[in-house]
Image 1 (cartoon, rainbow, N blue to C red):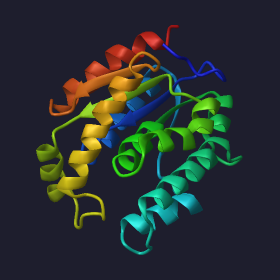
Image 2 (spheres, rainbow, N blue to C red; image 1 turned 180 degrees about the vertical axis):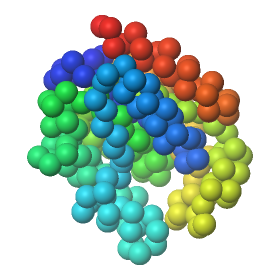
Image 3 (cartoon, helix red, strand yellow; image 1 turned 120 degrees about the vertical axis):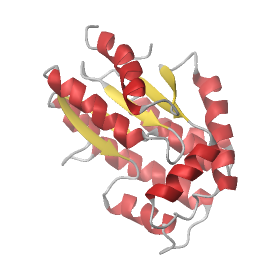
Image 4 (spheres, helix red, strand yellow; image 1 turned 120 degrees about the horizontal axis):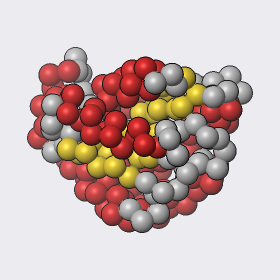
Length: 213
């Protein structure tokens, strides 16, 4: 297991294609951690900061941006996410918080690496990886069919890249990167089609021993 080199608190990244149920599982895990007297900070990427808002504007069609531009914006947003002095990840961890993030570098690898050279995306994110690697990546694996069904039920409108064709590419790239990094990073792959409570318990069985390290 590769631990972060900065604090004893945990940094856990949730990953998966759109509709995989990350936000629900983050809430379940936060509840468990809080019950065990851990301070928890929930966060997400893209962030709600100025760079993150630009990314969201591209996703909702308010701005134009090609895949290289989006990848570059995510690099900048992630570094700001880590380092900003108001609510950055490193600041929160220095104050004793365990941080749960909805997406981190693997999302860039999968989503941007599905459309541009993956090695370029990995290299572009090298500084974020140098600064802080998650103690655990949790990948909620669902089929594209399940994702599309959930998105259609849960969204008033679909974002620019929430198409079957794109999600198929992203899912394939996710599987490729999970295989590529399985010996270098701590990764938990969970069947995201299971009932939410079953998924939450599977995640907790992995996380709880980490609290005692």
